[in-house]
Length: 521
Image (cartoon, rainbow, N blue to C red; front, top):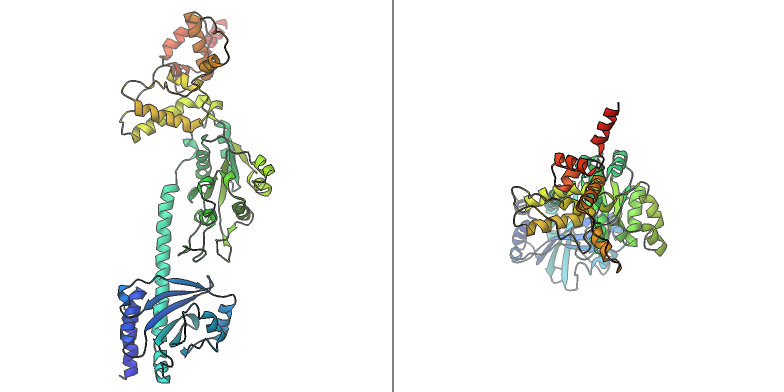
């Protein structure tokens, strides 16, 4: 075997010795420096997608003990086309003084007088992937024989570079899948329409609209006060739709800093800005094949509103720093508690975006407009919070407490009710829950007394007070006596006892009316 063959064999074994390209480069450098002049060995990639040179590995004496980060060096406009037109194939000595391409590259290559750079183009199946640069101190360091010898290592280095790129791609996809798994485990929630409390009572009209729109792909706008459960309605739409097997990605637009919102929603390319060391998919790309829920859409800055409008119109996104549109198959559900039409007048919200979003608005009513749902909500939060607090059995509710809760106006809506249940459980020291800390204005009665300096009305008899209390409970339960949400439950009474009390006080109710009509017949 000739010395040339032995040289190429040894270099090939060293450069292909590890999937870690830095280790392979260090091993190759340790051998190469004893054969030809070389102080620095650099491997780089021409990345057309980024329009840049990626320096992926350096090797020098004792470099195995030094971690050199990968560098991305943006190329001047049009330089990639010039490189392609030159069709580099054989090794050559770099001459920045007489070559316009390398004159433009000199600052990136840290080129200076008094050194010699030997460039080895690396090709696979005719395609230029990148290059290998041997740098030696001093001028005219390489002879024609050495340049020819180095030409023999182009193929093993090109194979090593291609393998490194393939390995990098595998690791990138692995990271993407792990990232998606972590992200979706946080975001996904299996809540179909039948899980919504009040679906057949206070939210009956809302759920009817959900059933109408869920099978379609159109954009939905959820309107309502803070804390009314708009996110739960978004869950119901998604999990009742053909997209239920896809992701449901939730974004609180008001929680994203203005400087990061474009990157978070639409993603960014590698090198798009300082710190963008890897490409990142935005929330819209993550939602591909599923639904994206944009909560507090009124908080989006105008620049992001323009990008969102393009997504709604063309069903494609463009990453920050990207040069190509990425198609996305998503459904958009937006929500807000703000008056978007007033924001349009103020110039804070785009009118064309409003028309795109408001094709099918759903208004989620506040708790004060669906008080018949309060008993079921209380039971649900008691069960959930008791489990969180490690209580095996949820405490019972004191007689009359549910009626007191139903008389309160709940300015904080469902969220306030949830917090109240949690506070009651924290204070619980045994016995039924009284819910005596509702808020500053506890009930309509206390608010009425607090208004003005008028003298309080004269006290009524016990029967009159009891009759008024029971009639109010019957109104709230729509005449229902027993069962969930019935007047007996609200008053903390046995249903038979309540019927006896109704008869005694002369209060008519459904069964009594049916009995009278039966006797009349």
